[in-house]
Image 1: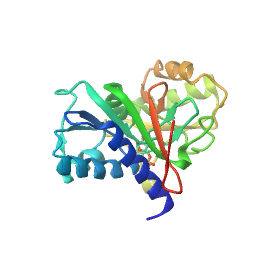
Image 2 (image 1 turned 30 degrees about the horizontal axis):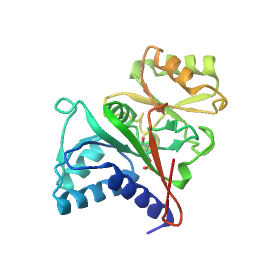
Image 3 (image 1 turned 135 degrees about the horizontal axis):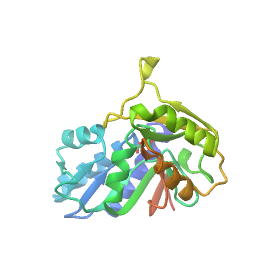
Image 4 (image 1 turned 135 degrees about the vertical axis):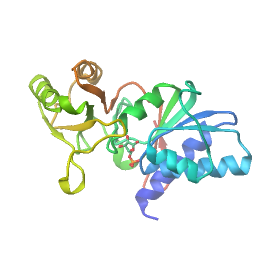
Length: 233
Ligand code: ABF
């Protein structure tokens, strides 16, 4: 396995070992790091005979949970979760996050908001001082399709930078989220800003469904390092 996958695995295993207990309702995020967390969850559930319900944040994580014979739940039945474990595209020194590189930010934010504790698992490349230092694909903003142009113009005029409609592979058309929306990726933004204020402003713009800025939500981050150890923050 590559160093980066070793790092993802180390962070994922640590989070599942530390934060999942028998009887827990667990929010399960999306992405490549979460694959290792689901593997470890399955191992613990089957070996230790744990009674765990998992609420997925995407079609991807639902499929992985089913494949691993883990019990899948819904927020309609379990609106309060003990913990949510998810990946991130970037984590700053205040534990603010950029998420949504996989276009599942809306479900990810909803599920995380239902959990008592939100734990992030990430490899060392995601650890940054300021948002935008490391992750260059931009802050994702999920928008209602008819509003993508006005939202792009409002954010560019008000805050600067460039927003680009995320296109599917081969540019056959826009990426459509699991909720039927489009994604705008915001690049070249100013970094020395109060992200809490900016996020709240963005969420007020008509047509914006959710942003990939997760401000003040994560309580714990596990960064897997190149040597397979884990740094906690
Ligand atoms: C999801 O998966 C997204 O919010 C984020 O884009 C991604 C995390 O990246 P990785 O694939 O590196 O785990 O959680």
